[in-house]
Image (tube, rainbow, N blue to C red; front, side, top):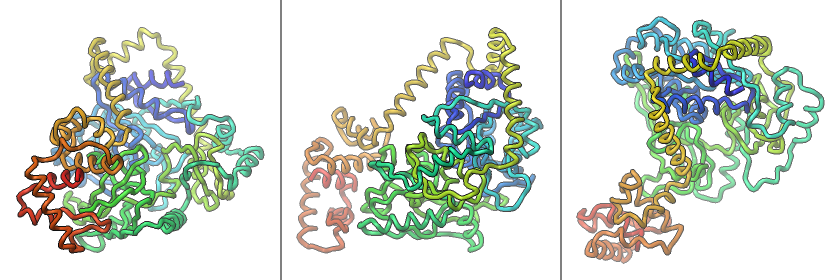
Length: 571
């Protein structure tokens, strides 16, 4: 049960958390994270993909451990990392490490993390003596391997055994809300799917789900995903904009960047296109896996503006993908829009997602675990539209089937051991652990921290409101654009863009108080009249709106662009 697992985590042991889809592994980690943060201990959370990392507000393994595009490292590379001041500071602060979606971590990467931490902590213990929590389900997809190997899973690394992990195999289901789907998933995990379950799946073939939205399409191959996305793009009756990459470095190294990342050489985009971000940018509030719809293209940069599924508006900018040599010097760089089309995604990319409904094609399944992962993305069998099923679709790795009873036995042992400890003794162990990671024990201070954390949760919940609507809520209490920008903690130009969107949504919105002084507004108005009179097509964008640059030039560069922008919004 989750409370037992939480107690095991609070003892300071290294822990492996597992269980079938929907047993609340992420929920448990969030509870443990809250426990630590309320005691002023900040855990480090990493995962193999951006989507998985986002569930716990973490970052990718490759980013945090500065692995670049490597899976294996040598002593020379570790020596180059040890010289970096920012990494010295980062790992000095590391007290508790949480690795989510551990099934997708290769034994090579797992061993690399161990070597890096031993080096930075100057400690020969596994992972440099840092408390390490691993979470994941090995019945799900294994790591994508570039070279054939008989060792595919993190638990096959010597570093796994060296951690001396306590195992917590969660049993209670939380996500799926119908027993039919739970039964099918449990049968897949047992390696014996009943005829009744096959009949249920057959009843979902090409099922009309009667939804008022298009369900996410999950496919096994990139080829199918690309075909579907192109078909959907062609259905849109809006103008297409092509974005081509720019690069620096040798052709060989540039090719390596494309092979090791999701960045595209060319991407065609339209208003209405469903897209996914393929890069992390916490400043702009998106990560690898954030999805949304293109609602416009910026009039100046020509880059897409994306409305994400949580309602936020993001003005994209070009991102860079780089390749470093052994001395950590950049030897190649690719710049491109950080987007890909996302009406359909691969099952590998879906791992970690929870979907209300999905259209799933398992007719070309080539990897064990694909069917299990795809089906476990949905909450209810009623949310499934099945497009195909082959003989491999419901298979899981025979090796995992073989070791699963041993994992359960280890979990039972850990449960029995902690259940035998008195509550008084347990509390002593908990307190000793908190002190060992420099945490708080003062009840009053812990309570204060919990209140702060709960306030942050409320703020984050509120922040799911579209960002320009949050700006609108502060218009009345802000005397100027500068004050509004300060109240929102954003740049002036971002706030002006929000005001433009708000004015387009509500023509009656009063923005006069944000205008510059009357003489400036008058000069801008006169320039605008001249622009319209000379009727030069280069002075106007494709939608007929006047461009800023000719107005700026007519005003001899004496009036800032921001003043021109706000005046045009209110005109």
